[in-house]
Length: 170
Image (tube, rainbow, N blue to C red; front, side, top):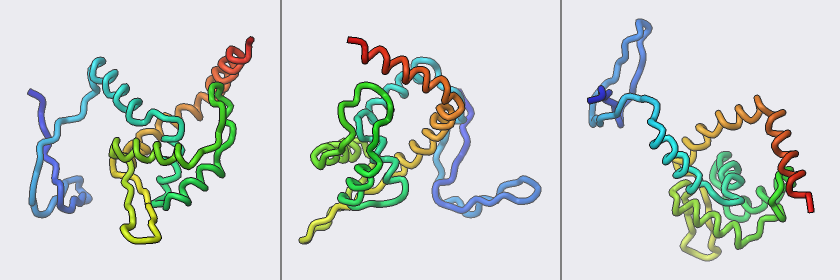
């Protein structure tokens, strides 16, 4: 049976100079498994899960804009439309975000519990969207992939060009 570490869920943790940890009052604890690399089957399944939760042409655009903080619907739409430029990859027929498409994307992100929409109950109706903690964690995890792409920019560019050439052949 793997070792389990006890983690506090609602108190302050401080580290002393000698390296010992002062945790303060224990209000509630939960068992947390020690971190270890997932087996191949788990790794593949979780990768598929994340891909399905973040699948969609505009999902990452929404997540990146919302990482700055909560945004009203029209501000979100305008911010994405301002950034919408050709990304250089083949397969996208247009880069103009329509109102109805943003609505569908936001609904999917809400269903995936990555975005929360707060709607005003009174006229004029406004909706403000913000990331959940899970989405913020996802964006932090994504940073390592972004750094990888920057480190291997020449590879990315070669693949992009190759795919573009393959799609432009009649």
